[in-house]
Structure formats: structure tokens, C-alpha cells
Image 1 (cartoon, rainbow, N blue to C red):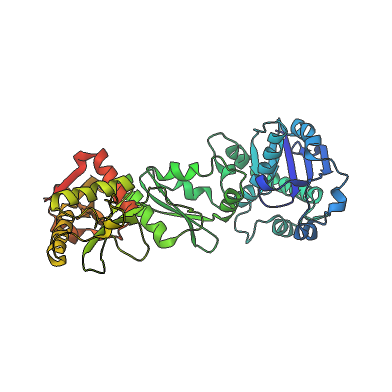
Image 2: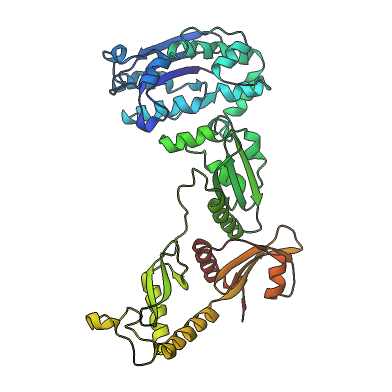
Length: 447
């Protein structure tokens, strides 16, 4: 087995927005270095000052160096039939794969991370950074934070690993079924292997244990693994991978319950990498207010942060459909509901009835609308054989969810005593309505 021990220096932390400033490739056959390629690279952009301070590579040093396009063919020929080895391999690999792709070369070779390998061979160390490992294993580093110096140190580390029984781990890591090399640097593979293949919600946590991402899954193990099957080169993806240290989870009876719990947890925890909610949010509301002459007026408006609507709608035309239905059935004034503008300013004129009489009809219309709001339960699989899951909507609002005995006679008052209340929001309501339409056989309607 021939290895390409690689180290690079770059202008920043993620491949899509930065470039390489130096590269060192040491071709290693397991005993000796049989080939070597090393050069500074002109990044064609200024090197940030803090990067210059750390690496010692200045703008002047790379001014006459080749751009990566000039060495892409050579780099590809060296790497193409080797095992790509690096300390925190996903960082180096992502940059080279990205740069080579720009030059028309597709890099698809096995990779091996000496950080993850060191954890297997030398468990229990406080830190697995290259510097810490070299101090612990008495490996000297010359030219720290330069590609050549760090690559030489990685070779010495790799020799120590091979001498202490790493070969068995290497063979396991390189199997196609193993995802070891694609996982975040600090995330133990065992945490993913212990995930159940059941519906639920998972939480990615950072070094301090803070939740940074919440997701739902039909199959927890498969879904979590899929996050790391194609590690992109964007800044957000690379930062996300670097910050994942642990995973926790909560099993749910159904995928629906997982979706509801995910929505609730995102609103409660507001994790940094949950950029936006996936479900459609109701954008419009039906509002009631009293004008200066004492008439109750209905209006469809975009949802307002500090006002509670009588009813909410995802689409504007849905709102007007409901409003016209109220107007026709309860003899309300189209003018006072802002839907008859044919008369221009006259649209503000009051109807023939006195405010108290007219407002009574508005009140009755809203009561009918409120009573017409659906109350129903959605049943599904439970966590145990003798139970079933239940999600409850009461008068158009999400009440809560939980588990009830299988075969229980369904009564809304009994359900409310057994279920856990949850906050209601538009996303959850839309989700439940859609589920009820798709699976009517799971819906129990209450009068």
C-alpha cells in the first residue's frame, strides 16, 4: 500500500472561499519516502496578516511561485493511485479536491486521517493535535506550520502508528462500508453506530455541549450519517463539521412526531446552524378591530408580530375565501371588510344597521368560524407494542402529543390528561393538516 502524506497551508479555513499557499506531498511506502513534491503556491490574493504571522509565508514569498493551475497535473499524477493521508484529512482533501476540480481533475481516492487513527492506537491522550501528539511521542517538528515541516512530522507519527498495530485499523478505515474518514474530526464513530434505526430527533453539540443543530429523521442512524457523506467546501459546511463533537437524540413513535418535536426544539433552542424552518409559514391573518364610529371591522393582513389574528392563512386567496364566506352567510358589509373598493372613499361608509346590531352579526360570524375550527387526533405507532402515539388538534390549535394505551376509547378530555402540551405555531398546524389529508385513516374527528 502506497501512501501520499500531505500537508498544505492556505489563506483561510474553507476551500470554496480560499486558496492554497504551500503544498508538500511525501510518497511513503510504509517504510521509506520514495518520492517528494513540495512548493509554495501563488494564491492570487493577499494572505491575511494573521495567517502570515502563523505560517511565516508572506505575500512577497509567493509572488513568483506557480499558481495552482500550473501544478495541478503534477499533483494529480502523484495522488491518483495513492491513499491520501493527512492530519485532519478532510481539511487538506477538501482543498485539493476543490482546486483540482477547477483544473479539470476529479480526485476520488481513499483517505486516511491520522487524528482518528491516533485515537484508536493511542487512546486517552488529552489532545490529538499534531503538536500535542509529537510532544507525547517524542517526535521533533522542524518548521511548524509550514507544509514541509508538518508533512515530515506526520510521516514520523505515521511510522509510530504502524509500529504500534495501526494496520488493522487502517484496513477497517479503508473499507468502502466504513464512513470513518468522512466524519467530523472530533465525533466518535461509535456515537453514530449506537444510533437506533427509528424515527426521532437528533442534536449535534459543540465542544461545550451546546446544541448547534437539530434535525428530524425517519431513521436516525441513516439520517445522521448522511450529513457527512458529501462534505462540501462552503464556509458554513466546513465550520459545521469542525464544531460537531457529540450527538444526542430522542426516539419518537412516528416521523410526524419527530417533525413536530424538531419544530418545537428549533424554536426553543434556536441552534446556530438551523438557518430556517423547512415548513411553509402562514403569512396572513384575519384581524378584527373597531373603527371610530363603533363598527367591528374585519381585515386580511400580513401577520403582525404583536397582534393575535382570529385565524391564519398560508395563502392570501385562502383568507379572502374564508372572509367572503362569512360576509355571505352572516350578511356582513363588504365595505367594512375591505373587500368592496368599487365605491372608492365610500367604502368606509357604515351599513344601515346601528353598530350594536351590526357588531352582533360580526360576533356571531366569528363564533361560527371558531366553532368550525377542527378538533381531531392523529394516531400512529407507539414506542411499545401496547401503546400508540397521538397528536391532538383542538379547535384549530395544536394541543400536544404523547402516547396512549393501544385500544383505548378515544375521548378528547381523556386525551388531554394523557398528552404532553406543546407550544402551538403555524408550521406545526400546517404540518398536521397536511398529514391528516395524506393519512385520513389515522384521523379521529371530534364534534
